[in-house]
Length: 145
Image (cartoon, rainbow, N blue to C red):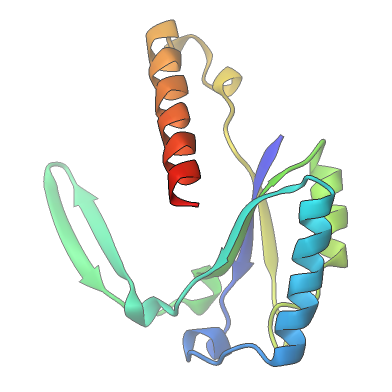
């Protein structure tokens, strides 16, 4: 199963406080363990929400809202995409993670939808389109990397 592991933002991360050298080294070591175990598919840190935008949808209307966004506890400061055998395995990996923030912090784990989760609505034609798009994304990543 694939899971998105979300590092929740804090007041410090939203203020743009950068991690210490020690934190970056500890997180680098943790990421190396994830890669060697074949768990990590992707992972990145995010700039504070002050540098972001939201697009709100209401029918056919789109409204762009500039950051920063008020509810820090609802914001994400970084993420990983992992391939694990179970949610329990993902939890065990997160338990080994260095605290990503200088103070209290929180990491959320959410499973990604798989094709089977969508049922009959995910027709063979839609599945073929999804497979083609994934192949194109993979090919583009190989060219860029």
